Amino acid sequence: MKALVCVKRVIDYNVKPRVKSDGTGVDLANVKMSINPFDEIAVEEAVRLKEKGVVSEIVAISVGPAKAQETLRTALAMGADRAILVQVNDNVDVEPLAVAKIVKAITDEEQPGLIVTGKQAIDDDSNQVGQMVAALLGCPQGTFANEVTVEGEFVVVKREIDGGIETVKLKLPAVITADLRLNEPRYASLPNIMKAKSKPLATKTPDHYGVDIATRLKMIKVGEPPARAAGIKVADVDALASALKELGVA
Amino acid sequence: MAKVLVWVEHDNMSVKDATLAAITAATQLGEAHLLVAGAGCAGVAEAAAKIAGVSKVHLAEDAVYANALPENVAPLITSLMCDFDAFVAPATSTGKNIAPRVAALLDVMQVSDILSVEGPKTFTRPIYAGNVIATVESSDAKLVITVRGTAFSKAEVTGGVAVIDMVASAHDTGLSSFVGSEIAKSERPELTSAKVIVSGGRALKDPETFQATIFPLADKLGAAIGASRAAVDAGYVPNDYQVGQTGKIVAPEVYIAVGISGAIQHLAGMKDSKTIIAINKDEEAPIFQVADIGLVADLFSAIPALTDKI
Image (tube, rainbow over all chains, first blue to last red; front, side, top):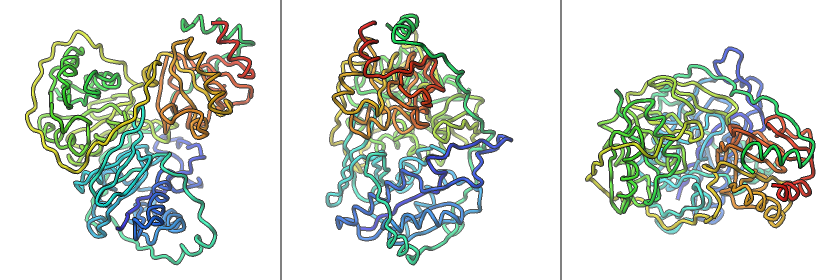
């Protein structure tokens, strides 16, 4: 069974984003970029399934600028076999719906049994692509996955839900979106990073798949959230206890 | 006036609180209709009909809807949407699971996790883990929206007199089945709707110390218990205790952060709390920059002392 893994190049999770002074967006010039952490977990899961002999080939795909090649090389170094970059111009944001349509078109060509991606990208925080891909393919979805087990023609997914864990059984092919605790991604070894450089990476365009990437949501402006005013420090536990009483909670 | 269909989150017994915030958002857009889909959930529909501001309740009762499997529920919603201009769901794990599937079937780009309604098709929403707020305007003919529960007031659960309409069609796609769930049972209030939350961080050392330190204080205050990602990753408490961008987003009256340094990802989950209290021995900890009341102290002596005094 083939697995398709979708990855996105995003601002590194340790970097605090800065809003551009004209409020048109977030300043990404000279900012460290990385693979979206949830997508990294998705890659790891696919690689583990390959190591278990469940998956035979892993195709990593990304929709993004030319530099998203680096993100795909990260996936290849972790164990993906080949990659497809659906390239757009720098500074073009492709919305989840358009990404989902591209993934659907690639799925039609590649016929994977599993499509794995992160539950959300840490830049736009949309949390949509996996569910949308499943809808467009008419296949089941195991979102916010905490544990994935392939059993014959089915995949059993433990999902992180509000208040606990839910288990669902899905007919293959299926879409899985990775939550934080699905696994702990490996570090790519130096030999594997070198090897990744010679693995095949095809470059396509949204046009090739017949997908219109015009945005549906117009960004009016971006801004900082309202800041909280600085508070006070109390001297000791007694003062804190009386503060709690004043608040009416103790 | 726009007609809005709201997904009612429930457990076939009662309406979940997050729905009430979604209804408030929906009434700001137009006429709010509710969809109650489930099995043996007529009681939920009756309760939903009493919620203030609701025009009509659509009840789809069938075994295929019992566990809100998106494969079965999304086609139901899509079929109803020919009569509606917008679909609104609370941004809960169920809402986030279902809404994008509906959006794609309608060829609509969803607006996720809205914080406010600024116009008929204009909304604010958090991006970059809440470090940036975007104002976006949809150009789609219909809207699909998820609503952040802490950003809207809750609709009143009484005063409404909506009629209940039965939805006939039900179809099992056969793509998925529900195996089971493990929902943590607790005497304490639920994290996302609690008035007071006591949260612990990595400084709590181990599961036993976490329990012995945080639980008595929470019990005395009638508070829910939360934790930072570091505490969850270290295994002090189960992962559904996690407050933060990748965990639960909370906004209680009082949030007490114990031994939590205040990483960006944690602050994103609790900074809308009305009053934030921080107890940490490191006076440089970033948590103090957002705290209304701070106490620089060793938590292992301060928390038991505080628990005794209240």
